[in-house]
Length: 169
Image 1 (spheres, rainbow, N blue to C red):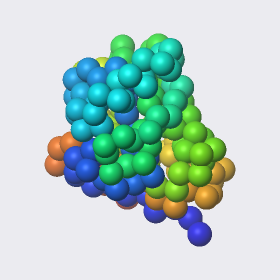
Image 2: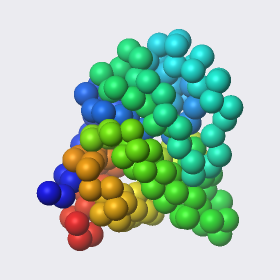
Image 3: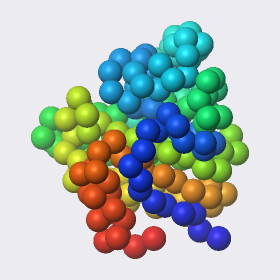
């Protein structure tokens, strides 16, 4: 059985999945801040003990007060026009998160649109990398049952739905 891969517009902090993916560690703005607020202060204390996270790597924490059991933290690249390895670094974020989920028996996970907020990665390019990388990783980690691309806006959702429709499973 192959995993379900879909996009939806929702608040990622409300999804009852095995893990949500956070695009940072330390509770700044955007989705990272929302996740930290919803999870509670225990998350920040735990993240401080992780000693950082390099771009493209992933680390795991409990979900604390979230409906998600776990949070997978990964740090996406800042967009500099695509000439500084941004696509490879972004792909590494998705691969590392899937690998970590599989290693911990997490069957369902939800990703935000990594790096498309304050890091400036163009949504159309980021969605292509995300969908292509996740689908390829799921061939290797076939125990994962569902991956959700959780979009903040209706416009982002349209982009992800178009990319999902264009690319083969």
